[in-house]
Image (cartoon, rainbow, N blue to C red):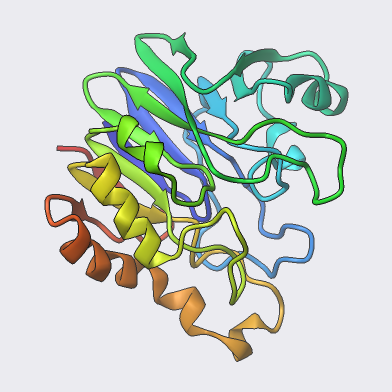
Length: 248
């Protein structure tokens, strides 16, 4: 299994000849967020499938989903397809609840729980329960999406790789997120052999760099430090956007 982190929650997972893209944000700006820091995603081929963890705009970015070819399978939380169909037209949608799974070629995608608000916006009536996903072929990778810490995480693993969110895009975190310390505790529960911190150091609101620049630059290294104590069995690899890892 080869994975490339393209920043924020966008990861290309290549396994058994199948490419699965997580929560794609493929453009340089996102609403009020500042310009992307790091390389813009460069996909050498259209993904065979996309997994969308929840409907928040930084995980379900319509301008990034719209150019994907109709043959790309869109795996989304149960209840999300009607909204996406109204914005994207008819596509190959697969809706899952936690515990359900689907096949993409010879790869299995299983939906897992997540502790995160599932609304499109805080007051929106458009809602679908947030999910994570485990992608399994010869190796297995858990993509956490966006989530807080919950005890049932221990039922997700063990896995070969965790793609774990360790921060957000501002200098503070609201409920339903992991900071580096809680993300390390999640590693104790999930028991991955390897972990890559994601959801940090990519998109940043204008002016935030003058307020708490450490929250942009430090979360990945802090997660590695905390994990060495909380889950020493997990080998943490801190990638820069555009860097890749082969799961061993």
